[in-house]
Every structure is written in structure tokens, then in C-alpha cells.
Image (cartoon, rainbow, N blue to C red):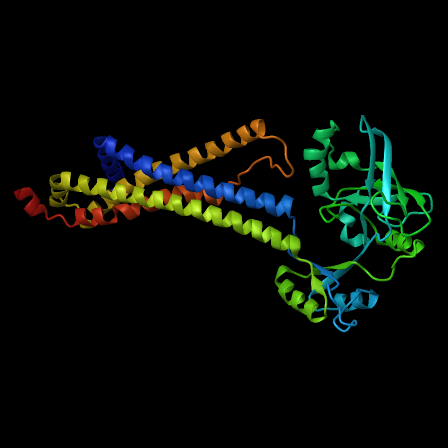
Length: 425
């Protein structure tokens, strides 16, 4: 049978039973729309968790001292010798040292703050890092210990800026800040003074900090400063300036991470994977929810396939004489089977396209409603959905597939019609 004749017969069959065709299309569209919608929502939420809430880099390993040491026999402190051993591990391409500012520090700011008046006193928490870890985020000057009298360069975390913009600033009528706006902003710091604890040194040193960029690798609840600055300030206050708080290892690729984690633990150190585990747990929760909604949508598609099977079976019985005549005038079993399958595929394609279009429209509408009605909160995304091309194409393809599954047995029954017996009545 020629394709043109086949398509013409398909159109005639669908027009003849418009109510049944509409019912089949509606069932497929509902299943595909719900499936595309919930999968897009799951992908979108996972992206927010992965990229904004817990931006964990797969090739980075955070090595910290063990919580309990036995006389230094199981690793203990992280000194330069330990850093060298960690850097020498197979699969490590770089190692960046970190040292917390162990002396208390505060900042009292009173002045203009991007067009607003601000008076604020805060405890300053800082960690010094090797410049290589954050060099890509420095936008002003060099990330090195400054000359006497110059401000210490500092990097706040991207997430800290997000929390400020969505919670701190609105509550105090302060301006919203972008990463580029804060570059160059300076504020005073007093080393050796604390608002919450007794100082451990009788000397209070005044200085200043200057923001030189914003980093995804920065300390979430504080500031990231040059390692040499942390060493100098700790030493001046009589604090430990020889051992490091942590070492960040760069693996050559993600596949080398499990082996490196095992090697680090064998050396007696601990891997701080709290954020990685939190990201994995959040991602797992989103995945489970998405799978549950996806299974519900697949069930709807299955019901749509059963509905199509029922409708086509009834259609085959009603058209048995018509199909018998087709067989009698030369149509083969494959032609009759192809006709029924093509009808189902057409219904499935229309339902898949409509369902996917409805899902896309729903994502746009809900994003617009969320932007207008939901209050600002940290890590609120511009869109809660992610619609890759394969999801859109897969939704339409699944509509066709579910329809073909439902039409399989009716098509075989149609192909098995005996033309002589049918025409004889």
C-alpha cells in the first residue's frame, strides 16, 4: 500500500470516530504532560541544589585532621610534611593549604554602605588559603599578604552574598548587591578582640579588609584571605601558625576520587565530605520524588494505552467488513496491520505533542507565578524547571510508543480477518 493512500485512510478513520480519537488523544496528553512536567521539575530542583545550595566540585577532596589522635600515630596534625605526602599521592594534581584565623577578630563599620547608612559590629571568621585555590575569582589586585598598612584582600562566598541579598538586606532596608558591586569595598578589622569571648592576647591590632571578588570556594560563614596573612596574624598573636586546618586536593579526574579518599584515610586523616553528603541526600530526595511522580505519569500512559487498545479493538470489530474488502482487493496482512498501527501512532503523536506543549506552558506559567507571588529567599532560582531537548523529544516519542503498545493486539486481530468469511457474512 502506498504511503499516500495509507495516510488518507488513517485520516478517514480518525474523522469517522472523532469522539474515540479525542478520548485517546486526551489520555496520552495527560500522561505525557504530567511526565514531562515532573521530570523537568526534578531536573530543575536538582540543578539548584547542585549549583547553588551545595556547589560541590567532583574533583576536590577536603582533607582535615582526625577528630581523635593516638599520640600522633594515626596521622594527627597537618603540617607541611603531611601536605607534601598528600600532594605526592597518585592521582593528585595539586594541593592547597588552609589555615583558620585562630585569633579572634571583629569589625565595627559606621558609614555609607552603597547609598545606605550602616552601623554594624560583627565577629569576623576567616580562613587563609593558597592563592591557587581561588585565583580564578580574584578580580582586584593579587591574592597575597599585603604590605604593612595595606588592606588584606578577602573573598566572601557566593552563597553568603545570596543569603545577604535574600534575608539580611530586605529585613534592614539595605541595598541588594551583585558580585561586581562589592569588589573594592573595604571595612576595618580589629585583630585580638572579640564580642563573644575573652581575648587570648593583650594586644589589639587594627587593620582593614578589602573585598577583591566573590568565590564559590570561599568559606560560607566568613571570609577567605591569603594563607600568608593568616600565618602572619596567628604568629603575631602567639597562636599556632605551623599546622593547617585543612588541605584541598585536586584529583586528576572524578574517577580517581574514591581511591584518593581511601589513601587519605589510610594515612590517618579524615575527609570532610559533609557538603557532598548533604548534596547527595538532597539530590536523592529529589530523585525519589521525581521517580514517584514519573511512575504515576507512566501509569497514566499505560492506562491511555489500554484505552487505545480498547478503542481500536472496537473499531476493528465495527470495520471488519471494510477490512475484509481491503483484503479481498489485494491488501496484505501487513497493510492492514500497518493501517491500525498508523492510526494509533497518529493519535499518540498528537497526544504527545499536545501533552508536551501543555507541560512547557505549565512550567512557564508556574515560573511566572513564582516570580510574582513567592517572597525572595536564598537560592531562589529564576526557573524551577529544566527542559532539555531530549526530555521534549522523549515526551513526544513516548506518546507514540504507548499508543503503538496499545494497538499491537488490535492490529494483529485486524490482520487476521478472513476476507472470504467476512464478506460471506
